[in-house]
Amino acid sequence: MTSQWYTTRAMQTPSRPGAAASAGPSRVRVRELGHVSLFVRDLEATRRFYRDLLGLRETGTAKGGRIAFFSAGVHHHDVSCEVARAEGPGPQPKGVPGLYHIAFDVGRSLDDLEAARRWVEAHGLAPFGETASSFSVRDPDGHEIELYVDSDRPG
Image (cartoon, helix red, strand yellow):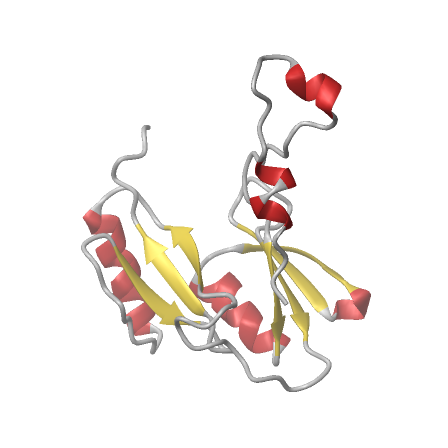
């Protein structure tokens, strides 16, 4: 059953400045995505993919080594991977509710994107879903990982 709370009360906005304080809590203001957590079959294969292939730094483990944390540099972790306790259906087909893909910014130029493409191909992965500024590969559990360049980003 789909919850409809978001279409009624949660989406109502105060009609005048300052009305939120008297009407109750103000709405949530998300600043950024904190991290993505995945269940995986083989933590060592996952380490090789995220750490060795994509270059994320492994920042720690938890639950007796059943969880590994990986960082792109700013946060303690951007991706956490936990060994699954049971077999599941794996990633959902495109168009079905669930996780579609995870995207990583790999640079600012098409040269950066091409270097990333050559790197993953040299390590036996086949890029797919290519656009002018991105392509995807699959991690060891079949999750779609998009690698992209954002040439509009300042800096």
